Image: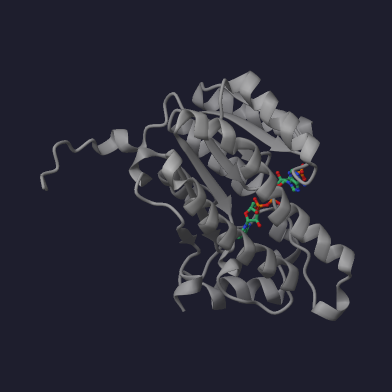
Length: 263
Ligand SMILES: NC(=O)c1ccc[n+]([C@@H]2O[C@H](COP(=O)([O-])OP(=O)(O)OC[C@H]3O[C@@H](n4cnc5c(N)ncnc54)[C@H](OP(=O)(O)O)[C@@H]3O)[C@@H](O)[C@H]2O)c1
């Protein structure tokens, strides 16, 4: 067996030039930050959200900043027909989809007895079914090309519990498990599947708790670093998992959580 490292490609390991990425939930928050990160590494990107105008203006900002092709598209990830149309649009605009980031997600908080079955369904539909539908849509093309990267946004709350978050924790645990299973299903096709488990980042999703006791407890009590994550601090994980640097990484749940789950 030859154990020598024949080349040390260094920085090219993280180069995404020639790659194309579809990012659901790309109009804002973590999805937008990751889309910008991939574009900064050389990828062309399509940003998706239900509000096409927001996705388009976010994409225009990325195109201007990084001189990459970046387009916006309106789709609701819970609707199979819209997911299929999204894939067609991505293939038309980008030529192919090498990288899928499922960042579209919602959270509805409250003690279990205060929540309705409809609220539970809403969270599961977007976070689990939407992720599942988008993975399912991109896989045939990735399989045909024998290369693909699937990156699903789970959460630290997919790994540990938190009172008042039953639908969300259930959905994110499901994303971690779905991603592991997908990694097994598509390993022989040159496709990796990994989840990212962020800790608290101050995006729109968390505005409601930002100035509350609950919010402060999150940040100071729950994280070793005792602060919110900054949006740019999610970018490295997405670039890494999308790139050749992570070619031997699949089925992982990568925490980017300020040490939340270390405690
Ligand atoms: N922020 C955090 O602290 C944190 C921590 C752990 C995990 N996460 C996860 O990271 C992901 C991104 O969160 P974020 O904080 O960036 O949230 P955000 O700022 O609220 O953004 C959510 C994105 O998802 C889109 N979206 C929501 N429902 C959709 C649907 N049905 N179809 C298509 N797009 C939809 C939104 O656009 P439209 O409303 O226009 O559709 C928006 O682009 C989520 O999966 C979240 O659970 C976040």
